[in-house]
Length: 447
Image 1 (tube, rainbow, N blue to C red):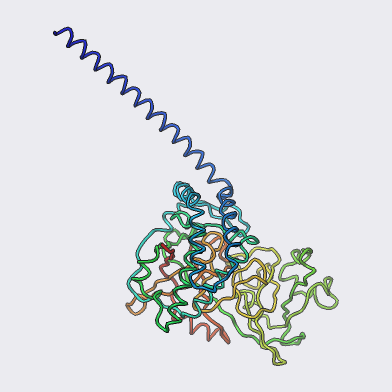
Image 2 (cartoon, rainbow, N blue to C red; image 1 turned 135 degrees about the horizontal axis):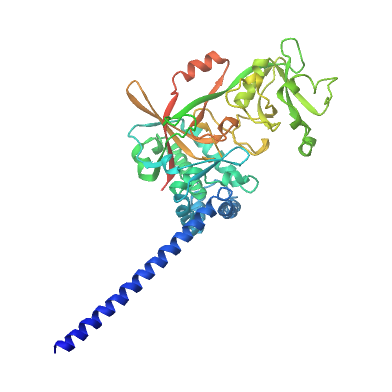
């Protein structure tokens, strides 16, 4: 009996040992394989800023654009279409979420070249919106939302930059999520305006119920202590101008001719070259561009800085002029305006214009509900609320990132708020003195 018991005991111990070895071996193999795959994924992500995955997003989003040619006849039609897009991208989005969460975000410059990497989870984090009324003009916000949404619909194939997920990919936000957000907001605003009531989008409870709220913590490589976003302000200024050069109005703004599209002669010349008279009678490039107006030097610099100018001509005509194409020279932060080498060529437009890959495609925008920012790293069409405290009370202001500029590429610590149309700097200064210099910022993404 003792012998049998001893044999059974040895047999049991042996089986247990074999099982333990097997399990340990299997665990080590799985762990090794997982580590190897993770290293492959990490390497894959860091190549060309998610380029292979981005091409898949582009393909799906371009297909989505084709499906949305019916416009906005029914307020909920576009939302339903976006939901279909979301369904088609579920598998891809899940993979993107896992990969994005495990890798640093690679920040690119205006030429889409790698600039530096950051831990994205320190920049974008989920929160709840504070319980204060959200301020904005309902009709103006609706206009900018519709125009921005239509830009995705009409130009996603020609402008792949808008299909970049940007840093919000860290929180699993995809381009279809952005479309879904725009569609839902358009539908809500249309319904609320039609019923002549204050929109639900001003109610923080409604926002927290229907949207993911993601806090944007500023990342400034030159000031790591900065946590709030710097809120600069831009405007459209009105300037008197002349059709012909005069002693007072002696600084030109030009337009490139259509024939210049395949001729990049203008990229050779700095702003100083242009203002020295190369396009004027007797200049070496006379006849290659069209003269639009002559302003004062102050008028030109404000037009270049703000991107749009409203010119009151001495003959009684008035019109908006917007930047079209530049000479390809970078804007240098910190360098005074008159010393910048970048020069913009203008075109006459029918409204204040924001982002667009070409002048005829630019988004028509409205003051008070438009932000300019880093479209490549943050993303076009992101709905943003800024929060600041004034007289001991929280103030919340909503707008759409529908514009950009050379100062924002790259820039993860600043937004430019379109304040309005002003006669002069004094009027502009009085208006923006009521606005914050720094604010806490939140992204809204439809759940």
